Image 1 (cartoon, rainbow, N blue to C red):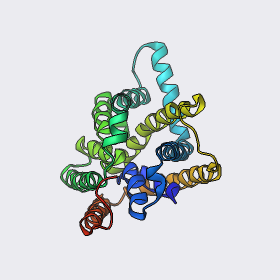
Image 2 (cartoon, rainbow, N blue to C red):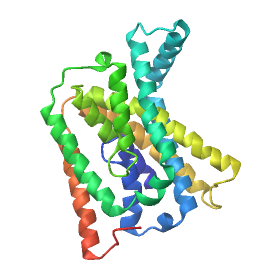
Image 3 (cartoon, rainbow, N blue to C red):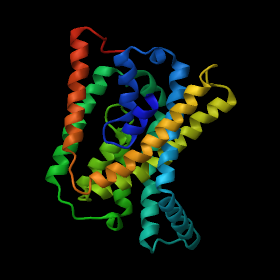
Length: 275
């Protein structure tokens, strides 16, 4: 179930990190109280969605890697694909730096249900307003390196659960007057180095023994990875198709509704506002 939740929310603008906290919190699942299991399972699910995205975008990945390598060899940026490749590379840096510098703070202080609910509502409204106000004048071939930097800085904001990495990068794309489908596609491509890099970094801790998969959970990890990979692939395909004809209103409504549900649960005393 958590694998499906991860796959459905990693690329949709609704915050996967927020959902991976809120779902166990709402159902009172003990995984939130097991720090080792929670961290390692989170890494496994993210690697599942990473695999699904790589399968979907493998042609783009090969194309931009070749363009990037060609640009490095000739020490110049002369082609559109080279420019896009560098936009993706440089756009990854802010999020990578933020994750490395604030990993402990993110893990220990920013994952409180009440704060996630606030972020869901606020950034859901921001996404919708920006999308409605800005025109769609630019496509994927119009993006510049400076656009990658701006979207990358926005991506760093999503280290706070509830903001949504895909949501805030799509918002930044729309601010740059990029059409919805292009904003989503660039957001997805920009996520690959971050998700893959974080997975490799945390996976190295498993290999070195500083963290480990708890005994008896091998099957759960395997099925979680498969579920997140398949659902993540389907969401990418479906969302890119959806955004060709529709706006972000449905996602804004969902985010606000979920935030209200969380606050309702907290106010009723059913669940505490902190973990």
